[in-house]
Image (cartoon, rainbow, N blue to C red; front, top):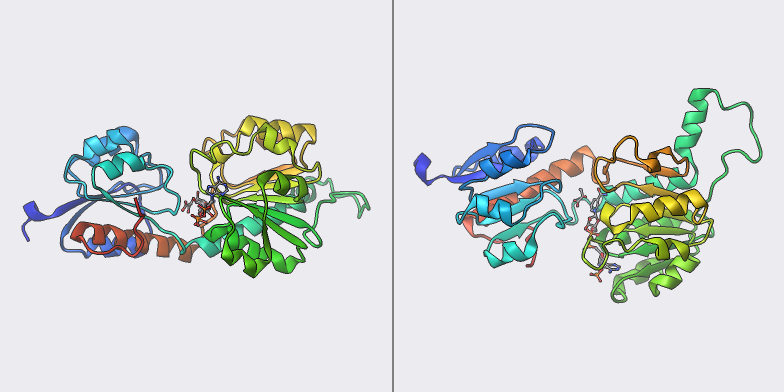
Length: 327
Ligand code: NDP
Ligand code: DGY
């Protein structure tokens, strides 16, 4: 195949070798990579995507009409190295007949594990404890010091019992969780495995000791967790979000945490990302913030890269993708 017939692929970031190798050995592709750990600046994205047949992107790249226009009519496939696709302008993409690949399932276990770690760290105040040890605040064993909340005998409410929500529930149940509630558009047969009770959101909020958000970000879930939401939670309840920052109204969360409306929050996702280091949430002892590391294990990221590459190549050749998003 001559260079003129090669299909142009733009990869918006340095990705794990498992994925890069697949792209590099694909003889039909001419691969251009933004070879950095930091996001491609918008202007570079618009320039580099021009004429591309395939685009491999990340959740930090906003792929909207402007990018699609910049790419032009060659673009056949967008493969995102993420399960979330709220950064893609799906209607525009669909209108132009472009296929989309994503990475469900392969990151479910890693993200569920991280959610459990964040929940325990938040409820049992691990960052505060570590800080006290380092700063000399640990004077003695004290009966009332650094007490938190335990899972044993508790009620957990999961908002969005999808792949990750169910994997979180499976992991939490063996801690002695008494009731597992979930909310969502309809009851799910797979919830039986965790004795999950499908309840209205208000019931979940009133009765849960731990509220875990694992739904996707959609127009319906945007700022779902707002003042009214937090006002229905117990004062002793712990709020955990590993879905997307925009599911939460952060001003309202800040108020709920500062006023004692809820006990604590653990967030793997925020608005914006990164959260500015002077953000008021970071000054609160009862808020634990992680830098969006739900899927960050070496093996998971390797498999995500591999799946993204396979999706992209299948999109270029017109073959079935291992994980194609139904548009
Ligand atoms: P799924 O599609 O399997 O699950 C999403 C769930 O959200 C579905 O059960 C869906 O319910 C539910 N949902 C949608 N709308 C609502 C609503 N209005 N109220 C309650 N539930 C709702 O996706 P995954 O479990 O694989 O991933 C979920 C999300 O987690 C991703 O979209 C992504 O944003 C985030 N994520 C974050 C990671 C991190 O690093 N922190 C890592 C991976 C994912 P229904 O079945 O009724 O549509
Ligand atoms: C996703 O895949 O949507 C996560 O947020 C990152 O793995």
